[in-house]
Image (cartoon, rainbow, N blue to C red; front, side):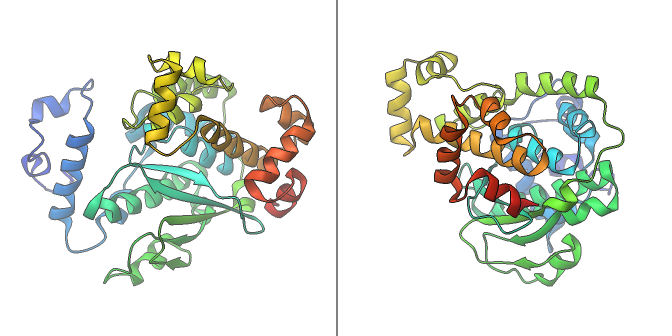
Length: 319
């Protein structure tokens, strides 16, 4: 925005930030400050799809350690999975969820807002999707843009709706309850020739340590952020200890938010299982072990409950 000639004071209006604070590397924006800045940007860039414009300018250096992790992902699909797993580091406003009924050859993700975003919903979801696409193109090349193969937005068609298909390069629809994005699994196999396993492990450790600190304040999201930073599935008692409360209090918080701890464990397991089934050659038995199931049959029953398909059927449809 500043490079385009906009005044920094206009961008920071209402945030209680000044140019000196903004320029400090250690400065971290609160959720309220970030929303205020987005509201200012929307006002300054109108008319038009401000989110698409912002997303098209995102680069890996702008997202810190997450950019380093993505640069060392194994392939396009792996990068997409990492963006979902560590979403608080790049997008605190939405949680992305795999939905069970996948189209053949596609991974379908639902973007659910973690709070009421009001009129900023359009800007932020546009930014999220276009920004994801831009990051993949920067790392993997122009062909990776086709990984986003169809989008159905969770808002009514705007006056400049025709811009979206041209900008995103795929079919676009509007008016759904939530935003749904289809990702092309064949494009997802595109390898990262610059992948470094050592660098990946370094950045992965940093992202795991940081993910749960940057999310929203709901108990559901805080718990998901911690689960994203782990490679195991703690009991409710152990999770409560990580959140500095009793198990009874944690379950009460979940009850108030209409969710159960087992549902959150299932969500994380399903996302990881779906990625491994589509983007790895690991056997179903090996995947079940990675997800801490006692036997493949137990994993198969759980996966069928999540998706309506057996792991083998899901893998075939994802090819």
